[in-house]
Image (cartoon, rainbow, N blue to C red; front, side, top):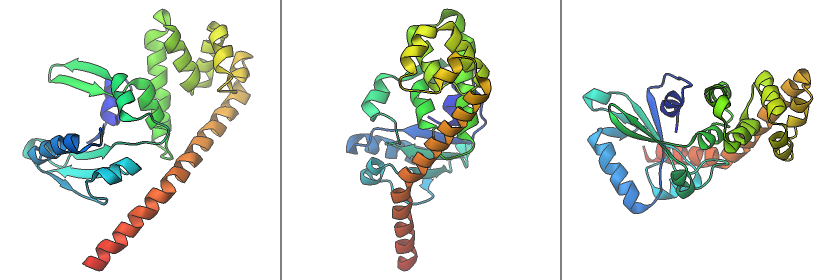
Length: 228
């Protein structure tokens, strides 16, 4: 669900990390522990690898020590802000066949939603992911793809183009994304301002989401220091 998935979707991002969305139940975590043992992966931060922390939205961080994946970091999450529960993500997954085997990716719309964070690096990636999908599919677009572009495009010129070419769909989606009204009349300057406002709003929501989680991590750190 991270940088490696972005590479598969054509918005290349170099990353030594591999991020996974997982089903947080006991049997699945047992299988994951076996895979981590095979990679000689060590827990490198708090919290511990337990269902309760995953269910609350924490990320669990590992570093691989096996020679062929030496120092690769593995991050595991089961719950993310604004992202549907794992069973729904699994139903919408994308399977990618490569020379090295089958890779299962979070669907593009779900990946975009997962990247709406407070981190600076995620917003240019969202823009590239959706732009790439538009330019690769605009000549044979499905209704679902058009509505996805209208919901998620972040390049003003491209958003204006889609709003102009699919006006009926744009009117429908505008009920949930008001800035599309500016795209429909070609007001690029206003649209750019509204996209920035939208981004700031999502970043603020992500900061609020993480406040209690960060507080819990700080408590765990203090407890670890006392034990030492």
